[in-house]
Image 1 (cartoon, one colour):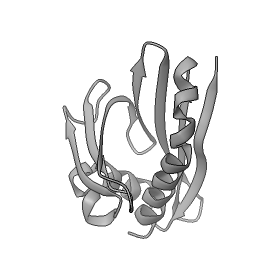
Image 2: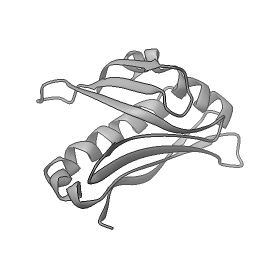
Image 3: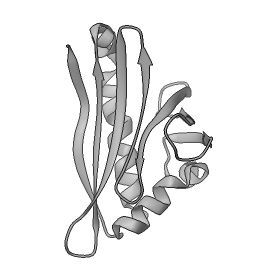
Amino acid sequence: MLKRYFIDDVTDTAASRRQAFSLFTRVEDWPDWCSVVRYARLFGGWRPGATLLFVIDLPGLPPAPVAVKVLEVVENERISWGLSLPLARIQHRFSFIDDDEGGCRLHQEEWSEGALTLLTLPFGKLIHRFDRRFAAEFAAMF
């Protein structure tokens, strides 16, 4: 199966894993600390099958709504969401890892799988830019 990673990166934070997870799960607050998120809402709570809607606002581009399904939630450890189509799937996973010094490492992975992965080629740099900015601004909150 064709698979393409947009990001596989770790960002260090000064927060504990519990603090980082708590801030991350307050979706409605994302626009308050993240300059590339205009709007964010979670419908159905942090559980598999819930819908996450957010509007990406990258400089120089029109705002773009993104609606995904929550796939996995492990409290204080991991959250993933994605979108499944007949010939493709895209998934975004955030893992919260203790750094053994009181802080937390945020491991962020986003990838696409399937035949339609080829259609994501023009968007790869934009997705990577959004993901990096999101993680950097998240870490700056602590």
